[in-house]
Length: 206
Image (cartoon, rainbow, N blue to C red; front, side, top):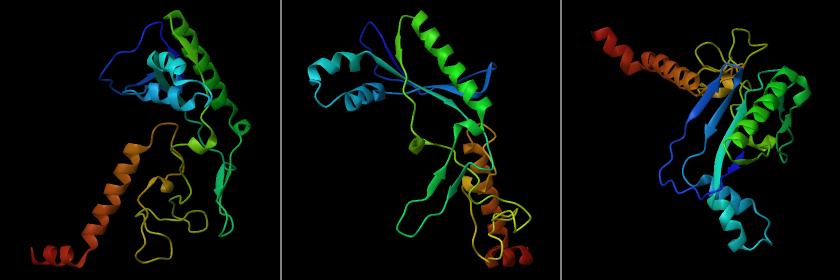
């Protein structure tokens, strides 16, 4: 969302801030720091529009990022393609109607509030190529038939191949999974360190 003010936005410093609300438990409201809103307006404006006409709008823009985690569904997946083709993303909003209903209500609410504050909001959906927090492509589990890595992060059937990114998570639980990914990576690293010959020998000597 870009919200246009009646006056130029002259802030030099801007801190990214994440806000939540109990009425929208899976949604977040994030401000875009710095001059990012201005750059978005300048780059997204039609190429035939003179810069001198676009600049006043760019100077009055405030950037807002409205996001709703859509949760998980067994049919939402990334499938491998041929060696010369890109992977195929199979995603359909209709599979998760509750999440998309919440997002529509969330956007409507923020738009209404911005109008009351004197801003003119303009919204544009981020395409599927802008998807973040995708999880589950190398999901962890005890059964090699339904998972890729075990509880230690090691790929089933492999002696020395570990996965430490978000792909091991079965889902993001409708929140930003960054801290969970950090914790998983630190856990796997700690287990690996305890198994190294040097560490084992030092422990034996001690």
